[in-house]
Length: 173
Image (cartoon, rainbow, N blue to C red; front, side, top):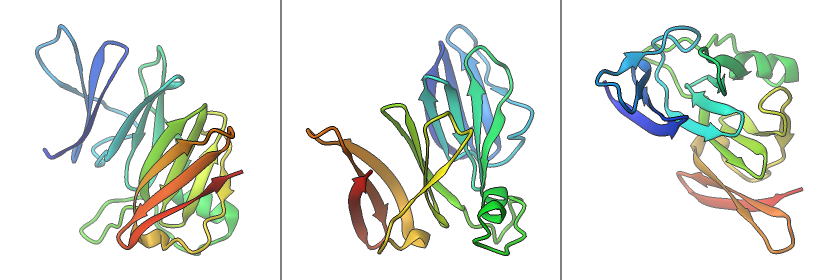
């Protein structure tokens, strides 16, 4: 299995792989596959946050709350698109040979989750319960590769989106 990401949380290691998530405790010898919502989907990004561990697949973001045993979805590209009426795609998030990752990166900073997708930039202040669109005029979202959020002395933050054509930065109000 290709390993996309690794993180440590609550004394355990989490691997994001082409075959889903694997977990191993510090004293355990064997990795175990996490069954459930994430299944065998590729997990490209893992992130430890105060609320728990986030796992990002190509089309969904999941949260494993602290003290819990199962990941639960907090963002689905398909359902979010239809609620915004921005697309008529019928993609259900199934991976296939022609699958394009809609979710590109997730960042946690100052109590806020930031999510970069091919359809827009979003933020959530409540662990993914509600999402707001972040206007990103001029950014070629289909080229998005990474995100960063940088603090300014003024207390505001600069949101930077890395793309195949360069880096775009703007203030997050």
